[in-house]
Image (cartoon, rainbow, N blue to C red):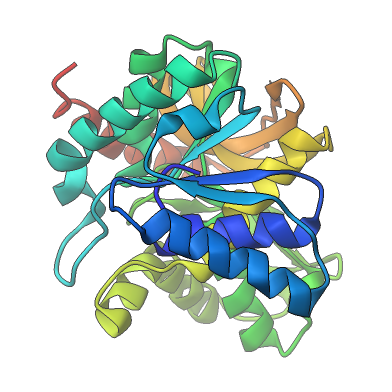
Length: 301
């Protein structure tokens, strides 16, 4: 786990509670990763797990990792878009990726740092890894937000809400309403168009809403979403999850990281799942791709 901040530490504890893998927290701030690792280990005595969580400022402790989760970078501040972070976080993500892959050349990279889509390009370029082994966490988080709002609006269990959010991890993300159901019933049969539009809008701006309230980025839901992706890889679950993947013609998008449903297993992305989108949804996805290309174009390489 590169970055022992809120997201990294939350993901580390979620994984520790699963009790199937060792976790290493790495951070440049002396004492931070060691202290959080110690705290997570001691929580095991209360919650009943026995992990091996290590904190370190050295990447030597990460040698031979199966999965590297990159959360390092500056968090968003109020009034700041994810895109505002691109120049600063490009340098950070590039340097930590280089250090991590030097110790774990066979690892799978899961990128969480913002702006997510652009940082996936950075990690792929710096690592030289194939596209199947470099992907990002965004769609699970965005979908979770939509599912939460739908459950509240319909008075239903969130466990029964099936939804998917595609596209870039920003205001142009695409909620696939045509494939959204509650207990198998299409959402459009349960609530009106105005209510759906409001939930879609709130989902697209969900990260900003949290930033405005907290003064910094969310961490509980992003940490849990990242842990779900690690589960899928480490346990070879073959889960179909919305992740930021490198597209080469799928969804009529080429040479760009975008959020789409993928099958995740031990080798990383094993397949990209193509949904049947409506014309409006396909147009919105193309608009999202254009916005992502603009941000990627800011990268130095």
